[in-house]
View 1: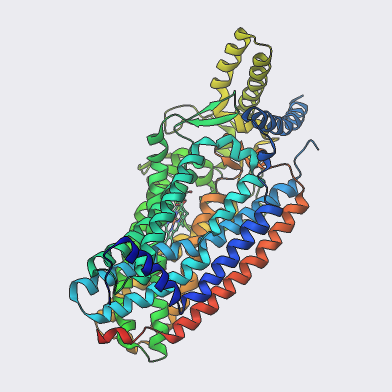
View 2: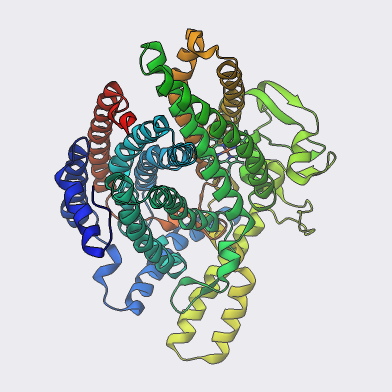
Length: 84
Length: 518
Ligand code: HEM
């Protein structure tokens, strides 16, 4: 069998490898279906990056600051009530 | 909505835990089996005996199935960071973003190249190059685990960073303090090397199945020889690195150690609980005995925690009350004092941002000083009572015992299997073959229990002392998190069934015989 001597032989190794898949075939189907579900369904419809709706770093940091504040103030009130 | 809904936190955590534990079904086998098949191919390279080639090839097939089903499952965790833990993602941001991306690209190209040579290149490259590709595949996978474990270690012990109030995020100030923190080193070694145990257990388990079926005997016995050594080394080093991790926890996360031991009232010369049953419903501030029953090894916890038989180990109540001397030689603050400091840090952050808007340089400098003084306790400002600082003690306590006791079981198992195979008695010992077969799930339980100790034990923290989960979570509808949780339950179950059916089919086919002609 021909040994790899050049970059194109290397590519041929991939092409032939994929052509002659036996037990690997269902695995590639699983990988492709999985990546499709992950990136075309889950990512798009269920997992948006929440901070990407802001354009600038300032807006992002302001948003996170407000989020952190909400929890803190609620708790702060309770905390100071307790210690009254 | 002002207050974060408790069910939102619970569902977000459950969803993350489900994904992480699912992901962790595949990683340890990749790391452990990878090493075993690389050793087998090395034996083929050295001895030129083709039986090692077909043995290595069979385990590479199992490796490939596990890899294909597991690959990219970790990316779902990144989706969750962006959607469910967006405050956290921003807050830690730059520390991890760039290195993780570089690692992802590096690992992808490295693995895509060498895995291809490993599977497609047997007759196309020299034996030496093929062997190097196999080792580089395993090395690449191990290296991929490195940065994510460094990231995890940083959350447990946030070293080498500085909080920038202008952008409300932490920035890396010392790369090496992050990458080489003692917590990170122990975690990396413990996680990777305990995976060798899991690889060893899977190989002896499947090989035992062949022996029980009285087929592929030589292949099975040869596989067992390599796997017992890898598994044995794995379990011994796991015990050493696990002890290293526990020693770090004693210094950096004393509450986690107290939970691991069900220790409420600490003191000098504390014993290690070898076995015990916790009193159900025990609260930190009641007078119930923590244990219904326990057997202790005297002074051992003190020795393991501070390397001194009479050393001081704080319990949960001591940590709540404060006042003891920490390993750094400082007087520990009570949780309430820390809560006050956390509130000060938060007020200072508020003032800082106000001063910045008003361009008031004097107030800005004052606020920054106050923030720097108190930032180490920022997260405590979110607590309503000291009880919020205590993790789920029973879950951590029992998981720790499951990991360590099963670790002991595997140590014994690998020694017995090695002895029987050395004396050429393994083939006849059906009972031992059954034990090996049924030990496969136990290895997974051991490994998952380790992660429960590490992650439930550090609750309520997303970042130790700085950001609790209730602040890290995104304020979205709990219902949508619940929905994605169940989508994952279905998706992961289907993928797992697919994996198990492909796996069992290939195991039934067994190693290829054709290679032995070479
Ligand atoms: C035999 C003695 C062992 C000891 C003393 C030990 C100790 C520990 C400790 C203290 C942790 C928590 C580390 C942290 O929170 O940062 C841990 C975590 C872990 N352990 Fe073990 N362990 C032992 C055996 C094992 C075995 C046999 C396995 C698996 C097959 C295992 C797998 C894990 C894993 C996967 C983690 C989570 C990753 C980490 O935090 O390092 N351990 N172990």
